[in-house]
Image 1 (cartoon, rainbow, N blue to C red):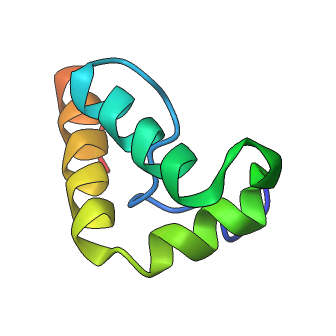
Image 2: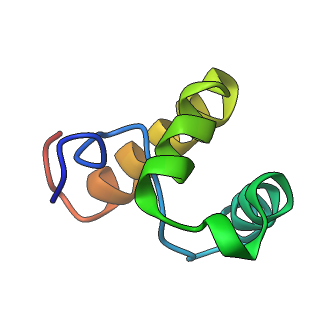
Length: 69
């Protein structure tokens, strides 16, 4: 995995409504032609509030599975 994607504050899975909203936000901002990982990480780096929420969701997922982060 590229180091810029190997981060606890990125969540590119769709498991619930909030994940879906994040994907819609990314698509609205970048458009369907710009969906490579460099553009996505660049966009998310400029939206720390979204990254914080993604990190919280990731931590909750790992905690629910008994995995320490």
